[in-house]
Length: 106
Image (cartoon, rainbow, N blue to C red):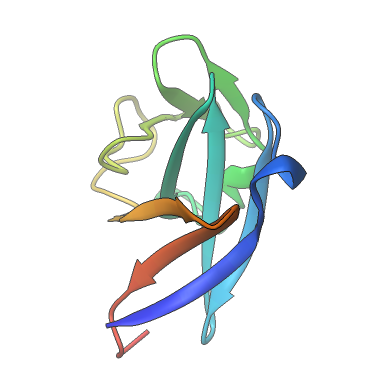
């Protein structure tokens, strides 16, 4: 496993998202009401960044392209036209720095 530093906690206020890369794989890190979540940053319906979507009050993000919703806790698609999962990654704050853990093969 590899650890990626996203940025300082204060740089990602509630309601915002950040996009980082693990190799060539984009990952979206969301601050939803003070809780951090990390999921794959590509909609499973079409190649569009979920980090550009709108956060919902129910721990979801809505893809800005076609309106598919994804669960921030699991990365699972909750509505069509997307299906499957964008994937999810462990995320935490250590010494004020947001970090995510990703597989070495990304």
